[in-house]
Image 1 (cartoon, rainbow, N blue to C red):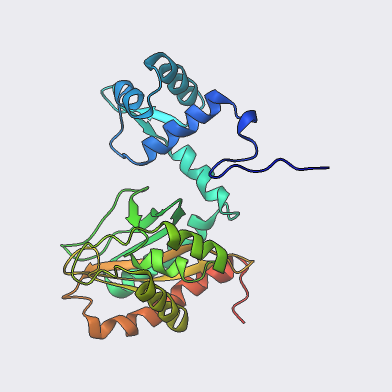
Image 2 (cartoon, helix red, strand yellow):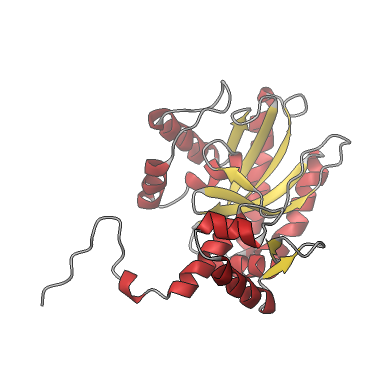
Length: 267
């Protein structure tokens, strides 16, 4: 029996899509990119859907607990309920609980803000953190998006992805230049990922923000898939280049502790 030929860039199931569900998912993705929230008019303008349609979607999502309104009642924001579903999507529903004491231990060890994150589409998303001990420290909002290309957590996860998935992600990478240290071509980036796999941890050597260094390591689930990453961020004066390898080994040890709790066999 002949099979339907899949069109370039299309799915086999497009004719079965539920329009209102597609609109709701578009609203989710839009809100995920703006932690400060958006008005109905802004959502309508960005999605090109009518205000009436957006109003009905938002009312439904609010009643179900997936979005909330800011104190003024004008802006709509994603709720923590949706974040909880995201954690479950890892296949590790309590990954945050299994990580928090480790993240705090990282923070206490180095004094810098320690974070936990995962990949979401083409970005790394921070899902939990332990604020640093120094008066000057780096902090982010839960749900903060981070460039996969230049970040230590992004590299740490990318380096251990299955080959096909890794190559597919790199094909879409734009290799934007942020600083003089940014890796801006695929050949050198592949070399960087090879180095990450050899060492077991990744570094951001002021590749996104001048004077800021990050060191991160992957967290694996029971199947050996890199579901998350842990990392610390600090100024280059406190995390100088000559210290990154020493710190990286310790960060990997912290990450391995979480991996073992998720059922990953380190041996």
